[in-house]
Length: 269
Image (cartoon, rainbow, N blue to C red; front, side):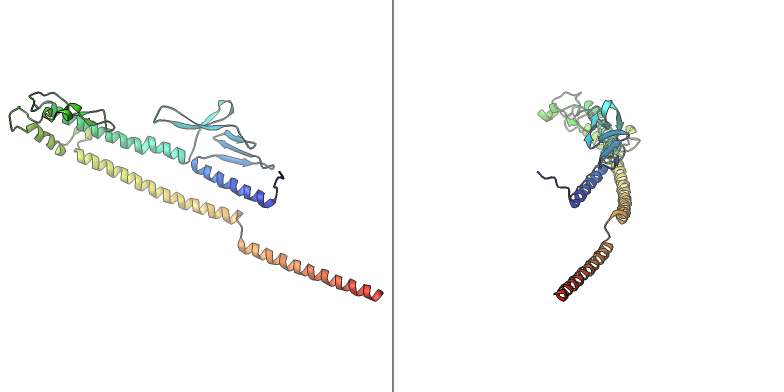
């Protein structure tokens, strides 16, 4: 196979490489360097991933489930945590806003279970027994109704005395909605939930605003780069016209010389 070394092919490959580097730049921060022989080197925090157009390192994730961290690992075991980029954004979102939201949801669920179970366990069911928990679980991820109660609704303990028509425990549980809870900072269940939702909304609004600002900055930087390295169509058209005029002048000169030579030859005959 004949290797294609046409300049337009080289330029196309360079454009493709630039596109891939920009895509990589969205994922993580890195430094790249291309030498005079077009050998590229890519490093992350001083750790080489690509050297002389060869892969010499990799990105590796390590840590407990749900707490994975990503680092660049090179030859000899040298490593460096990744800097800015989409991967780091995911990690920071997981360990920041999402972790806070999960913690608040768990806090709400644990308080709800504790208060409902405290009242429910003090009541008596239609089967004449008591002491059972209404909710089972450790937090928002696994909260559920006690399977024993689901199997026999008569075991639900809504009576304070066991007497027919006594629903004092059910009323007390219903009033929990309006009761301020010390474990929730003195807020009611609905108040704490609304505050959590509002906080997430504010964080999301702030993040969206920052994203729009960064997109504007990226657009300005790309326009500046394009102004330096991009193709100016007006300039290229002017150069093309100059070359066309030069070609026409050269062609006219050759035609004139050919006519003169033909005339001289005819005179010699």
